[in-house]
Amino acid sequence: MIDKVRKNSIISDHSTTQAIRNAVSNLPQTTLFASVNFLSLGKRAAIDQALFRMMTDGDIERVARGLYAVKGQGVATQTVAASMAHKTGERLGFISSDKGANRLTMATTGQSRTVKTQGATVTFRQMSQRKIQLCSSPVGRALLELWMIGEKQITQLDIKRVVAKWPEKEFEPYAPLLPEWLRNYLQKTMAPRKSVKIGLSGPYDWSNRHIRDDVLIKKVLERHHFEDLARLCMHYGLPKVKRVFKTRDFHPMTKAIVKRMLTNISKGLKNPK
Image (cartoon, rainbow, N blue to C red; front, side, top):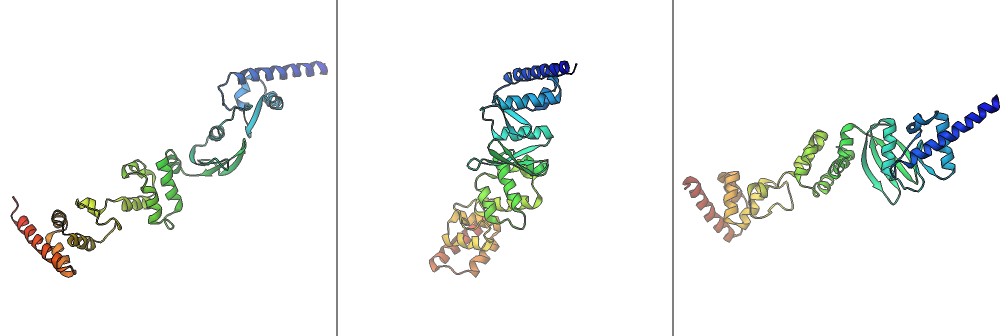
């Protein structure tokens, strides 16, 4: 009786193994699978034994704990990470990949951990939903990098290094995901230069985006380009421009030219056509 039961058990195990082999052969290439995918084909113990037997025979390989793939198909590490997350129900976001070191870093709503998988290392870093949403694009990941630096450590150089890559409109969709302090930093850094805002012919403030008004006015006066001077008076008001002109030193010829220009601008403002 015992021998009969044992014989039936062996037949059942072989039957389960064959059923799993057939099921695996019908899977698309690079598909990952686990014991739970074959629960309809037999008991859990028989399924585990079948997978172990197939691995011993060289038909499949374990790419991570509880995850298998057909031998030699070279499943991408990011696919492995996604499958691991699917098992636990956590949400992932791509952070970075170091191919040279075979290392992948992923943001996760689950626990932070490091997992060895198929010759590579996957590092899961627990993060909030907002940060994971930022991981969905290069622009978002750049903003996340700034966020991770922190409000107290971040510098204007850090901001400029990132904002130089994309125009302001690229950041707008991500604004609701960012902390207020980072939004303020970005808005201040990405604000258009005064020379652009006023409509000047040249980048008088090219070396200093946050140039003081009086310094910008002095630079324009020194160059004494009439159209720029007129735009400056329209923007700041003629009294302010005259005040800077009177309190700063200029070359005598420049002084004469600017004085004549301001007189003409003053007449034009009083008697617009």
